[in-house]
Amino acid sequence: MASERTLSIIKPDATKRNLTGAIIDRFERRGLRIVAQKRLRLTTEQAERFYAVHAERPFYRSLVRFMTSGPVVVQVLEGPDAIAVNREVMGATDPAKAAPGTISKDFAESIEANSVHGSDSAETAAQEIAFFFSALEIDP
Ligand code: CMP
Image (cartoon, rainbow, N blue to C red; front, side, top):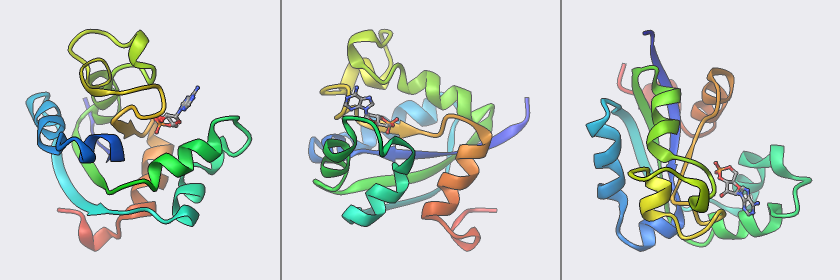
């Protein structure tokens, strides 16, 4: 299994409820290593750009409002098969459809306020990591 990197966002609903550590614990227990991390508040322009792929979706404006409603913690997670492992740990986007023991099932408030984001492919991961981090900010 090749070592990969993926971009993770702990979303405003989770930072507000003080769940950052509980979520990080889920990642680390599954062998994902945090090789970069920062807490920040997205501007509307940044959230629009990050989620530009969803611009035509009916939930886009609400998603941008939600993602700018409080601080987020953005992270680069590294490990064998990190993209798939992270998606497994997160569970389905919709908490109503998420498996027991996943972050979505245990922490998400709704399909929108779903506590975490994770890249969905190697190509997206590279783009999303570059969106938030420079090479100098990532543990080599
Ligand atoms: P994320 O993985 O960050 O990618 C896009 C986000 O849009 C998703 O998580 C949810 O927060 C949100 N989202 C996806 N589908 C819906 C939906 N049907 N209604 C509202 N928000 C959604």
